[in-house]
Image (cartoon, rainbow, N blue to C red):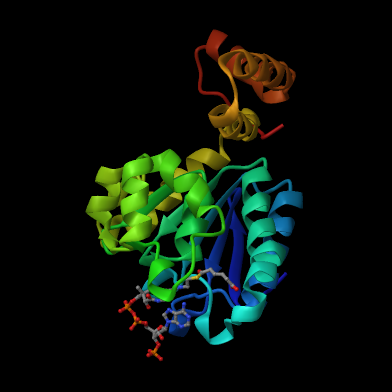
Length: 256
Ligand code: T3D
């Protein structure tokens, strides 16, 4: 299927979602919300898709809400109706999602990157929470993910002062997993995505496990691990993994 504001391409098990409003720094318009949620549904349903990448066209990753479409009167409703379901659908997707942060990520664009499972950044990327500058509070999960990634003190600094951090600072803070030079960036994120797409079905369960941990007690988390280990252990991929180990060869996972 094709989309008005998003490029969507599937190859070798990887769905690449490119936010495609480069003249607005890929800011979220109403149409881009509709397109993104539709293509996430498509990727979730498609058994060929085993990993996803979210990136941006042009020089930005995503500049958050399109401020030309901003309406002070309906802001809470828009957050509930558009951003919250988007963040939840990314987190509930049982397939790993990589944010390939090619440029600036601001406001809900930064939230989008933080809601992904892994973040790889070009050395031209930067991050700004941006909300303070326009008199809003963080939304789309930013206040949830940011302290978990960087700690509460640094999260407060990034939110209250709203300064823009470059890719190197983002790596030091733990906002991103890896930074690569611009010239090597597409090959680097494609390599990560390819490795995830060739991974076992259990990657989806791992994602659930890690999401469950921050609000669980040790006892609850141990039980959650046991439950998901039961599901993982029953997959074809777990059989293949153990068989391949015994046969001293690389496993060939099928995502089942
Ligand atoms: O109701 C609701 O929807 C609530 C939900 C809120 C969620 C949010 O995301 S709120 C936060 C919204 N985002 C921002 O406040 C960020 C605004 N943008 C910026 O601060 C800067 O543009 C950047 C830091 C992202 C990048 O700066 P820079 O200097 O690299 O680029 P620029 O020159 O500011 O922007 C280039 C163009 O993109 C420019 O247009 P022009 O002059 O070339 O015609 C600029 O207006 C446009 N642009 C950038 N961000 C947005 C945007 N246009 C609309 N909406 C934007 N968010």
